[in-house]
Image 1 (cartoon, rainbow, N blue to C red):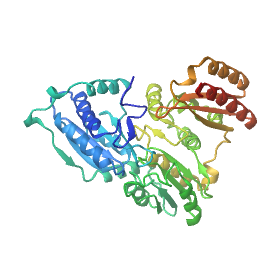
Image 2 (spheres, one colour):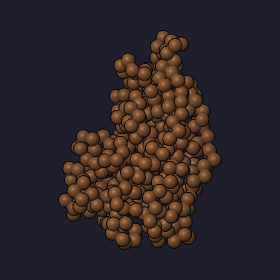
Image 3 (cartoon, rainbow, N blue to C red):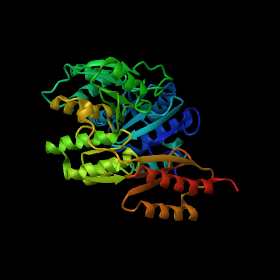
Image 4 (cartoon, helix red, strand yellow):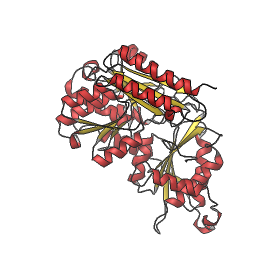
Length: 449
């Protein structure tokens, strides 16, 4: 049983378990000791988003790392993919991102990256947790070996250049008006800069962080402001990132949203035509729409499905040697350019297709008609009801109902006491019927006796 790590690092409400100063400091010590390999001077790269609590968590982590003899390089607010990229580029032994992604400002989290720039394996996390639960007093560095902290002043510029390098040579964004919504988060400087330097006219939304407005009424989880700004300014495209910029949604010139499945389809089609799609396979999660699967089949491209979470997408991509993967929610992993989801780089791939084809986003970015899909959450107390006999029996009944016409996905939330019920089928009435039956069974189990 994990006490600290969840599906994507450690996350929770600031100043409450597990996001406390004490745990952050202990994590710094444990992770530092875990990644001490060899006799060289060890280092960790440390970034964050724009949450007020980031200062507190950053200081606690720094003290933990320094106390076990690791040097710390601070880069301030930068996207999660920038931390992954810089960790590998600078040959750091560990990368750390302080962020709760798309959550509200009161939450925070800690994500860890290995020296290869990839998120840690379950085994690494388990070993770090074991260290955190022991007394590390005897393993602290002697006074002469305590680490040093410094700041990398050109970190933002390095990431901007890396993102721009993913845009095809010879293409420019001259003449394009683009709205960029950075969710008042970690990309508020670098994303508009990259787009402007590539030639675009940039309209900024959600680019004025104050410590408490991250993801508040803006960004990929609340894209209404983006869609309205695209129409108001007559823009060619809108780009919505989340708080740590590892996911993206697009708005076309009419203000209509384009989700992660459509973005995956567009990138897969473009890269397949250019012979860049490795292995003829795209990796997505169980939540991706069947319409995407059918579209990829028409291209002779396979779709591999994983559990929900970009780390599972990346693991399967590495197993299969695939270079395109993502989630309906907007995590896009393009391993030709990044080791984790990168919203800016994914958006640049979409813009490259628009420039090459010279057609509006409303035509280019809608490649398939999604099957009707419904997602409903059922909250429970006590034990998760998914193993209850009545629920298992109802699951079999619903699967028989959908056989050959749709699919059912049941999963337990990794962060809340919720069961997520997702059904999709060609017939929307069938979707509603299946969801209602499944939720009714779950709710009966969760009701107090």
